[in-house]
Length: 471
Image 1 (cartoon, one colour):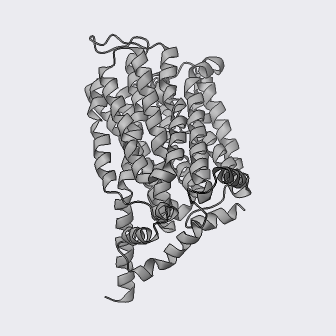
Image 2 (cartoon, rainbow, N blue to C red):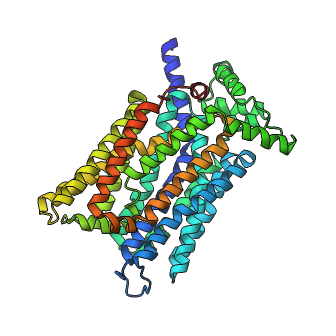
């Protein structure tokens, strides 16, 4: 075997090893996708007493639906905070394992629920589970992957997320029973637990715990058991990257002062501000405000379609967009992909609003056009702005503050989602259904201007290089 063939073989082995290593972290997103789809199918069934099961006494008013659909996101920040407090001590693997416990408990509670209070409690528990899972899974993938694969493999989480949504919506479209649908998905946390038990620890985390030899061994495993000398350069870079004192015996007051000083540095404040704006624009243009009420939204469009299977089809479009991200982000880069997909989603929203506003009596053809534009916006968002926000979350912050800043940004993102979902019915009543699309689309165009000015390119750069660019 010549040198070129040998190097190609090593690259293939390394890629396969990294894909296998992150499988548990990615599969965690299947559960999150199921959790986020749960309010959609429950609200679609129970709102305004449209109950299909005569033995199910529950129904939801729009006010109750807005609380049920948004509590999931209101409680997610608390899960993120708990995750940030335990991540440095427990490590990514244990944190990801723990998140399956409340998730499984919530699914069982949903199945046996007989009142609205239980639905609220389940939504709260799922929110805590989602928040606890988000930070560890993203930072784990960021730390174990090579720079050339990091963007693609981190964005793969989005595909798994939509697979969970697809599984839930497809089962519901077939069974028309939300209880049966959710209890059938309880196999997801069980499978995820099995996968995570075989997941290796992050070499970066092991170095922060003074386990250098184990970290070196894990790095070789993640690179396809490459010879030690082949990994030594990358390992030394990790040592430099983690060269901050993590001694738990240090004075707590000094640690607190040091942390606050780090949080005020430009390489923390600048990416923090950038990501907050990213999540504002991404959440606004990714139809997150419509998701709990998707049955009602699609009905208002007026196209003669089966609503349940249309929701399933929209999730399939999202999966296609996520897969395209994996294979094209290393070619286009994150900056261009963000700008293009945000622009497309914004224009689709503005067109949907304009057609609907100026044609209150929708003809069948125009109903189909509005429906197609909405589905294009869903595809576009899943192709760029939705997955890339979470990829950037794991890349932009320095290691010393990553646990705090990532959790804070993720928490604020979910709070933004809470506001959008909880108050969307009130917003629609105030401005009108189609005017809302125009407002959201115009906001997205402002986002394009902002990202053109301030979003740097991070593709194929090491974490150290990214950190240096914000100093």
